[in-house]
Image 1 (cartoon, rainbow, N blue to C red):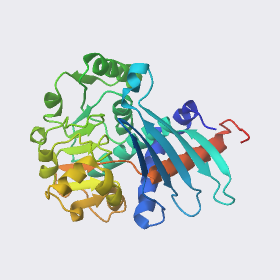
Image 2: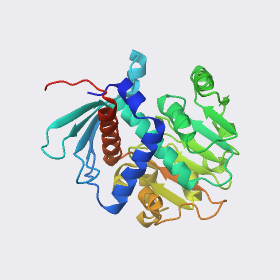
Image 3: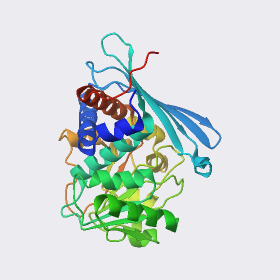
Length: 321
């Protein structure tokens, strides 16, 4: 068993980013096995199951996750999850891993990977909309691939955004500016990341400057869209983590397709950018939008990177099932 603290110590940001590079490379090469994720709605709550195998020589991995938006009132995380991995040779359960920390880190690491491939050069200002666990994780991960002159953070609750800024200053030594207004935080930014649970847009396309790169990680169901239609309309490149999954579940992509503003052929898999099949950014002034709903191969890559690192370090708790 690997606890949340095990994951934090073993799955550092450099390992996490490299594991996500491998995940999307294997997906693009056709080596990964990625069935459709299961979604089990229950009123305002939902459960999801991601199952995948990164390659034939790694075992199957499954993540079972619940999303309960009102858990905050109980002092609990809104997302709970557990990851299990099976031995590739005999199929025995080989690891049970805290899924919350895996999800947080692999999601932010994939965004950092995307930024390293898609951002305009130079990129001076990073804005993160959302000051929760994912918002802070994204700033930590993105620092590993690019140093920005200024980092901005916004969320609707003043105490939350100021606490996040203070925490990151103490932890990383970087001056994160907390903004009271989302528009002011976005205007002039080179890279904007939306990490909210909002079902309505928190980012308006007319706020974007030429050359902006936008990443959304909160539009992971067809009813959620953190980015408005103007933003997707202005994007000359729409990048997604997996086209079939996005077409079914990615809120801003689903709505753009339904309205006839975009075609499936417009969607560029991140794996094509990782493998050099698509250039990603073609000129410095174009706007790029990347929507990530998250796919199981990301968890599979994270799990096996963790298992290998844990074996090397002699970490984890052995249990008998």
